[in-house]
Length: 249
Image 1 (cartoon, rainbow, N blue to C red):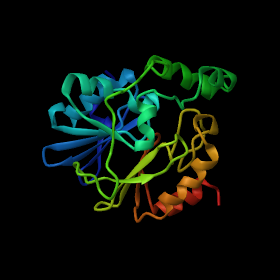
Image 2: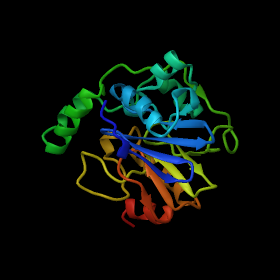
Image 3: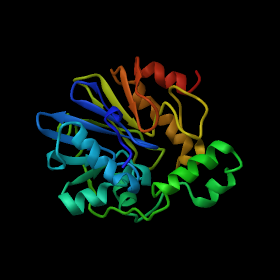
Image 4: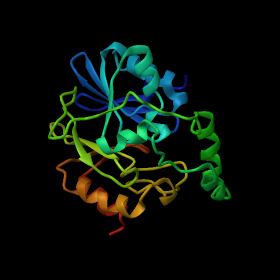
């Protein structure tokens, strides 16, 4: 276990940012109930459970996991949470087959090796391997969330389609607190990048890079001023400005 108390940070009313070793996940709090948004790598499962305790809750308080997309570094702890604790998991209907591994839209090992001449990529790849990045993570228990407005879950998250990074990638807006959880559609850092601040992930990680860029229009229209990414630190300021910065406009 590597998560520490200072890795679990309340960043808005009822919203905790958890800083994992290589990826973020989030806890949405409503009284004693929680929604977990994303679930790290397979090797982060202990850390996910520890972060819940560090937020002052129990795993039994988690009403559901929302998965922004089904890459191994966001889906990792879902199978354990389902099998050991009966926690349901939901994602965009388009993403469900990906979560169940009826198809796979993840960067391949040969592609990573082709870019490993870059020191940042090589270093990240070794760390990701240790967290279980190449494991066969399949979650047949993942269900589609219902269409239309806020979900009936702690935090009342509103799905925002941001398809492109994967076919069914989804961000989640929290209108009551001006927060948007952007998953990998818009990040603020990554071990493979020297940049800091709002940015797109390198194209090798996206299933459809062109569509991933176009999806930022859905984020730009949100009335939100706290951006919580899948990778990097939280960003404060109008999300529209963050999108423009990421696109270098």
